[in-house]
Image (cartoon, rainbow, N blue to C red; front, side):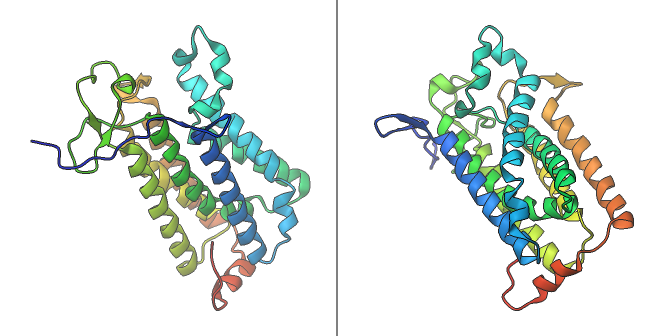
Amino acid sequence: MPLIASIPSPSSGTIDIGINLHVYGILLAIGVVIAATMAERRWKRWGHDPHDFQNIVVVVVICGVVGARLYHVISDYQLFEGDWLRVFEIWKGGLSIWGVVIGGMLGIIVMCRRKGYDTLGLMDAIVPGLLVAQALGRFGNWFNQELFGEPSKLPWALEIDKVNRPAGFEHFATFHPTFLYESLYCLALFFLLVQVERRTRLRRGQLGAIYVMGYTFGRFWLEHLRIDDANLVLGFRVNAWVSALCFLAGALWFRWLGRHSSTDEQKYQSLAEPNGPAA
């Protein structure tokens, strides 16, 4: 069948303004600013001191970026064999959301313990903005022509230059735009979390648990579409296993918090106020 329509890919992942700026890095920076601004706004709206978040955000972001890169390097170490200096080239892609969450969570736990802040409450404040940042950051994969899915002739199939097609797929011109699928999924999950938060009296930390379950549920299926090189365990991609295990952990965490955590009354009082935004 002839191709009716398709999504073109950018010819370059950089913008030349006298120096080459990598779009992936720009989008990551914008995503961090958006996520931090939303989290601080939510924290303040719930009646907390906005300086609480400002006091930890730099450390949390650094831990998230370091964790994102370390996870990618460890899980796909074969990509760096023979040229380990490429480990530091984060502007070219290769930041794992799993590492972001793990590294950022460790940063939050450590800093909140040091400062005496509400760890679970801060996590709940952060996750909606994190989803928006993820949705934006995925467009970096579009600019880099990476992490796309199987060949496709759907009207929204993604055009990939031959030089960026994996071995064995050189004769296919269009592929599933998994970057777009995940971006739209993250935005849908963001609106779902906001509505759940408005309509349900969750315990501290449960919004974070819903984020973990919601994101990993979608990511599990997206992993089956992707054709980039990845290590396999029992026939499944490593990240598919991570998704399944994190989903289970999120469900257990949600249940445990329902029995042992408390409700933030200040938070729900602010949500009940007229025109009180949740995010």
